[in-house]
Length: 417
Image 1 (cartoon, helix red, strand yellow):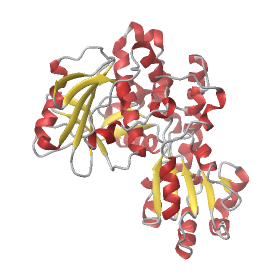
Image 2 (image 1 turned 135 degrees about the horizontal axis):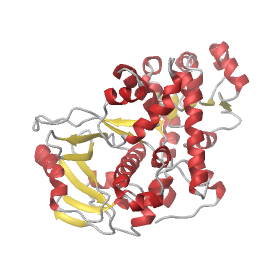
Image 3 (image 1 turned 180 degrees about the horizontal axis):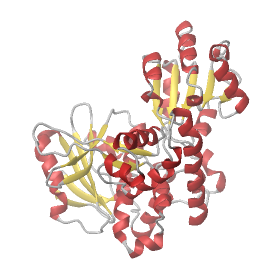
Image 4 (image 1 turned 45 degrees about the vertical axis):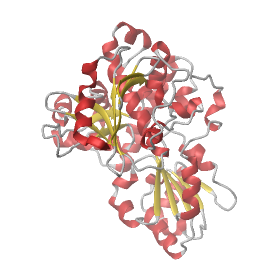
């Protein structure tokens, strides 16, 4: 199901992580909402601001200067607060730690950050036991369609696959993939206007946010690196190859990729490992977290993809990965994501594992037809985990579920929402 929304829609669509924020503020001293810029963190955080919990943004130059010059004084006297873009003044976090150690009431601070602050030892060490971290990504299709978005929970709870209702296929599915989920991009009805916004968005992040979190000697290489990574989306990570394309060493390329990952532009999905399978690839796979942004970087358009669908496969795989990661952000289950790939090239694009070691495997195909060989990686994964194998799915461009085995099915991509 797809819906057309008026321009002010972003503030009107419920975000599915909101219940986690509300619960966290009831029993945890500090709640941190992290995610990419323009994903909707500010809109969501402002819902919790009031006379007793003022809203403070560090995107304001005067406020930022005050926070950086005297972090302890800045926090002193704040009983509660919403502080937006806290990564811009990381020393505030130590002041917040001191404050919440003196007054341990829950819900003291709601923070937002556009970088993965948990990668900073300062945050991990100073706020351990005092902090709950919640990730907010760009809109999920479930949020836009108003559907439950509970496929993973259903499968792990034994409810089985849902019925197919209003499947999205063909050009309609391609349109969703190309749009992505950034609220501001979705406001724009033309492809050209949307891609122009996304390109400006990337330029702003590379110019400002990279400087906030790292000292980069060759900042001018970052836009070119992002283009190189976009061309390799859905492939195994190869820092030597990325570096060679830009005249960088492999360690430097690895450092720069890590920075882009901390800014929530991309995700390196780690390899799955198991004692029952010895010949497994040990290299992560590279994915972008928004396919609208990926398409803009690659210059992909509907007409181009319709003529040459070989470029559509990586986009669709990234789309499924990002949608699955969004489902995980509001699930109450603690789920790990990895990929499965043997030295013989048999693979499963996503392995989702719960804390009991139970496994769901998802393979993505851009074609409308799924054949038995397309399930070879899923069958190897099933054999490796045995009774802990919950479900194997091939998600593809089709409108109905096709059973291949009791625990192996092909079905529409739109099962994700």
